[in-house]
Image 1 (cartoon, helix red, strand yellow):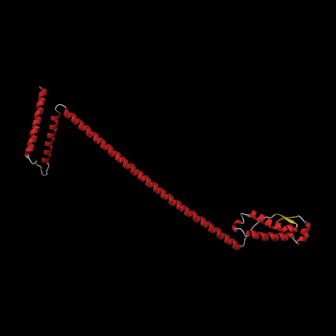
Image 2 (tube, rainbow, N blue to C red):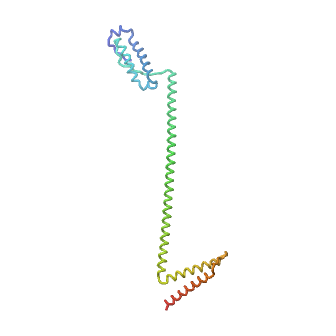
Image 3 (cartoon, rainbow, N blue to C red):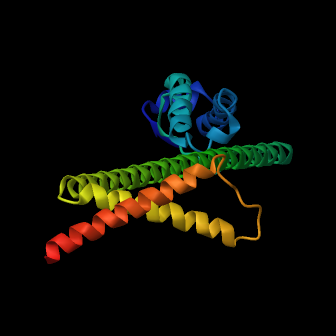
Length: 224
């Protein structure tokens, strides 16, 4: 506590011991000011406490011929019970912050896990979609190639039939195929299928022979 005597008469006769009186008033004022704020803030607001104590003492010290220049709190030592209460409060605050941090971490972990599963599902879905598209494109390409090959085959057959002797060659090919397939059935150890009319076979054989004869005549004509 820093004091300055402004009026020596008042300081000598206005009060017995202005230093003792100022010191006691400072302690009383400090208790009053500290009682208005939270205990854990007293260390943070020491300058504010000093100013409030100076203002309270200076108002009374004017009658003593003394001016208060400055008041400085060097140390604050609360009672043991208060210290224990503060320690419990700080411990509770630390545990509270730790619980909040843990809860926030778990929440963020669940969010990240859900986001990961969501992203994985999207990627799997995109992969399946791409796979189906590729398969569909492959099937479409295959159908296109088969159709193209079939059309090309039909075109060539049509060209062959339109040529001289083309129709005769086609009939001969059909007759040969018929006889070959019928012969294969006869070689199998299965039940043989006989046409409903045996005349069908004779007619087919006659057709084949007629075609062969016609083909031979054509060849002889070409040779001659």
